[in-house]
Length: 96
Image 1: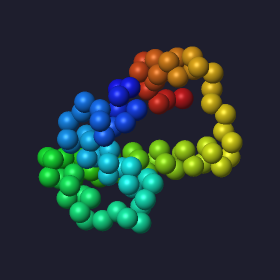
Image 2 (image 1 turned 90 degrees about the vertical axis):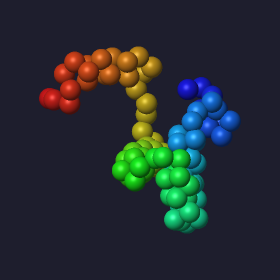
Image 3 (image 1 turned 90 degrees about the horizontal axis):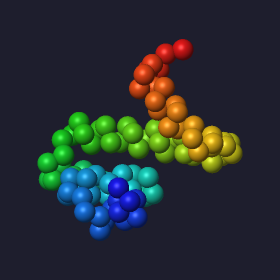
Image 4 (image 1 turned 120 degrees about the vertical axis):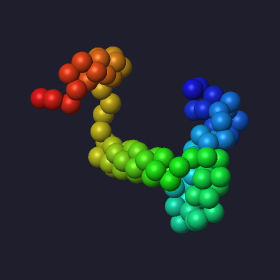
């Protein structure tokens, strides 16, 4: 995981993941340059159209939240919050 975060291009991951990450990077940083050839490159590795669609959904939501957080100056919770919240969600789900 650390190698992927450092540089997905050189990390020991399969071509499907590498091409999907390349696509999402372009989608995030250079959306005007995105075209059919980018999708075809991911499809050629064996990733399905549905998987690409799901990756776009996740990236779209993350990018939106990230931009909102930056714009509105949202503060991050304390370090232990996420582990505690994750355990709660595993146990109870998204219920009030």
